[in-house]
Image 1 (cartoon, one colour):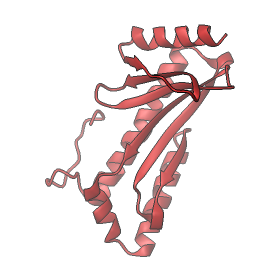
Image 2 (spheres, rainbow, N blue to C red):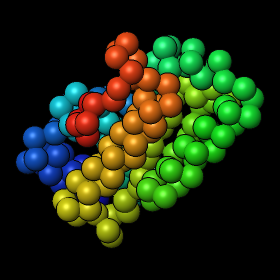
Image 3 (tube, rainbow, N blue to C red):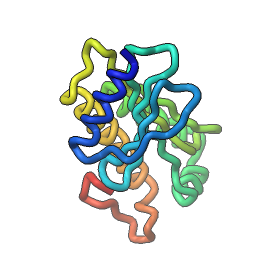
Length: 161
């Protein structure tokens, strides 16, 4: 069953042109790196011991420029920013982890799970797109609050930054 799921998922990712490579990982039955969109790296894995589960995830580090700006906020403002991110992500139907010591966001991880009985090409690609949209919302929120990081002070209007 594991190999069947692996082959099916890899074929679907290849069919839509986002499969990048399979990577060795002792903690998984399979671990694929994909690019959606082109420059955005995501992981598609099946954890060991869970042959009916596929997890899609995207980790993002906050730039030092944005972290430096966050540190300048008052304690209340930092806490409000983290709560805003939580509420925003919670509304997206994804799972997430925020790394934010002292309420200064350092990184975030967005994931979603698909069980084999719900696994289809449509559901897989839809989930990948949902994770990316959730990530880009975080990026835009950071850019809105702390500048684009390019010295120009404005964010791109493209979803594919």
